[in-house]
Amino acid sequence: MTANTRFSFLKHLPLPIVIMLLGTLLTRAAYFMVWPFLAIILYQQFNMSATGIGGLLAIASILGSITGVYSGYLSDIFCRRTVMLVGVIISVFSFVMMAFSSSPLLYLIAISGISIGRALLEACSKALIGDYIESPKGRESIQYFRYYLVNIGAAIGPYVGLMGGLSAQKETFLLTAIVYFVYGIALRRYLLPATELKKSQSIDYPISFSNTLKTIIVHRAFMLLLLCNILVMFVYANFDSTLVQYLSRTDLPNVVSLIALLVIVNSLTIILTQLPLLHLLRRLTPRSKILLGIFFIALAQLIFAFSPLDTAYYLCFATIILSFGEIVAIPTFNVEVDRLTPHHLRGAFFGASNLASIGTALAPLYGGLMLDLFSGKTLFLWLFFISVMTLLIYYLFLVKPLNQG
Image 1 (cartoon, rainbow, N blue to C red):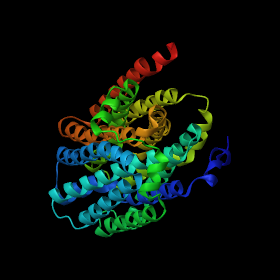
Image 2 (image 1 turned 120 degrees about the horizontal axis):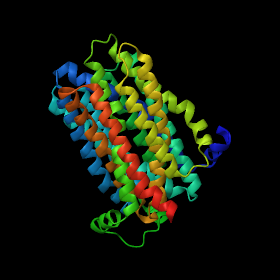
Image 3 (image 1 turned 90 degrees about the horizontal axis):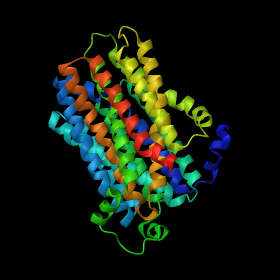
Image 4 (image 1 turned 135 degrees about the vertical axis):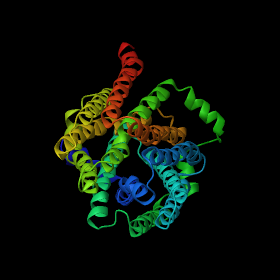
């Protein structure tokens, strides 16, 4: 399967999906111009402890996760465009606020706004694919392609932020706000208005939020999938947050360059190997792919635990293994959510899947505590143990019953 055959559907995509995909690329590039360096900014400007930084980032992420559930429900009842525009507006104001923040409290408010805006955009963007694409295979391909674009943005962003000398400057935050603003204009202009989108969803009666929550909670397969996704994101997110804190507290020269290098290695690995891996694993079921991805993520934690810090080679190798796990597992979780989701509740289920960000939220708090109380080796060995437990839960409760059935 070549890249041309894999993504030949792109030429036939509806314009709103094209706008969403381009917006995802641009906003993620802008987002990653600043986000990987936040821990360094907070440490250098306010001399915050690792636990304090982890707690601040955790609070912001949890707020975003909770908001995502309700916003996904609202997008089912009203329309995706309205919720996405609200997410863009919140993001713009939050990045502008961050540009002029002078205290940890203001940073907390701004970072929380960014997390909330991202949650609104994430849930609606994923659900939007199902609104316009009927074929399950087509939706699966677009979910993978969207994730592909996310990582192109993640590769470009840190490089631009570092090479432009903007990684800790207010101009970076303002430039990011401008990119989100432009995306908002495109959404306002090209996404279907509320009345037309309502018709396309064919909702004959409103569903209460409480009944929607009950439907989600009693969906056993989805809840197990969500639990495993939370644990995987908890382990994976330590790469973005805790590893940054770990390295920034060492005596390594050019630590900012090293952090940017690892982020870029992560993204470039995904960009260069996603298509070959998809081809290689094309005969595997989504659940088998998730199992394999969790295995790679677990292996990466072992390598991080025993990597010497006086050379970047071992850290880069661990990052490549982690990236393989990310490629195989994380976008496939979205594919599984799409397969399990009732059509009329797609936004609510994808909003609920944002609760996986709880893992992302708790990761910096866990990492900060481990760095303050123990060592980096202990931190990564526990992450390895959590990865193995997640793999067992997923196999015993989701994969094995399906095979027996």
